[in-house]
Image 1 (tube, helix red, strand yellow):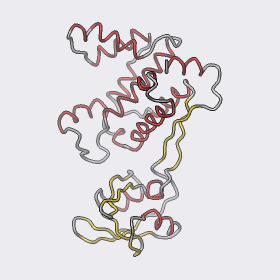
Image 2: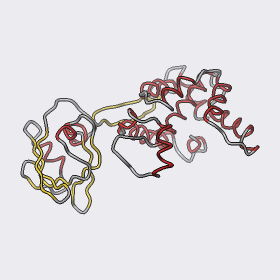
Image 3: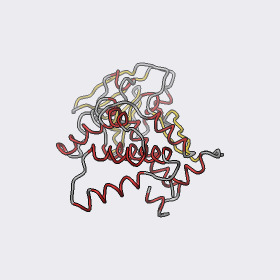
Image 4: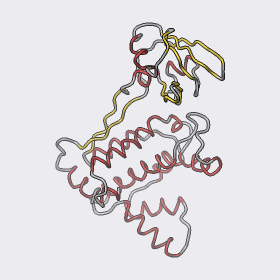
Amino acid sequence: IHLLRSKVFTIEQYLKELTSRMQAHVDNHGRFHYSVAESSYDTWLDGYEPGAPNRKVNIYTEGCLLAFAADIMIIKATGAKLGLDEVMRKLYVEYGQKGIGVSTMDYKRMLEEVSGLDFTDYFNDYVFGTRAYESLLMDLLEEIGVDFIQEPAALYSHARVGLKSIVENNKVIIKAIFPGSPADLAGLLLNDVIFAVNGIALNCDLDQWLNYFDDQMKTLQLIRGGHLMEISLPEVTRNFYTKVELKRTAEPHVGQRPMFNAWKR
């Protein structure tokens, strides 16, 4: 937020960065299994290795979004007079300047002291727990006049098959799989190399051929650990990976304007 307030970022650039954090959040199903608090311990233990798919979350992404949520909650509770900045200033005076470490409960106490709110559920549900908080973020974004837009991902492999891949040395390599998607149900694995769809060799054009066979059975030819394999995808009618976008509300109402100005002050 300080990049926006210092005018290093325009509001459009800031929302683009916040969108990328939101996208990373919704794409990572580890958020349903492992809290940000638990993931922080794992980060100390195993560094920044990806680890088991969908097991943990990125503490920087989740920390960013939870800090954003706390900021808007404070701004709303104090009538646009105070925000998370005031919490940080007080923590610095009471702890940082005295060389004293800050505990989680110290942070919680300061949030409550500045805002007048009870942050117990916030910590239990979103910091120590795995409760989904997209609806909370959507409500808080609305408070400042920012629309949360979510629609099916543009690529067929993302939206309809539920896999994400990269092209490396002209090879299509699977790097993410949506739980419960056709890719998952078919038994595809991370690092599988897809080289053909329905017997047609790929030229780094996986989505072109998935689209071509949209209403037909799709069988992938792939290499896994040096072995050739053939896997057929089950057909479904729903979408999986989605695309997130944050945009300023076209016509903010009278209550959103002071909230927005207090947030970006």
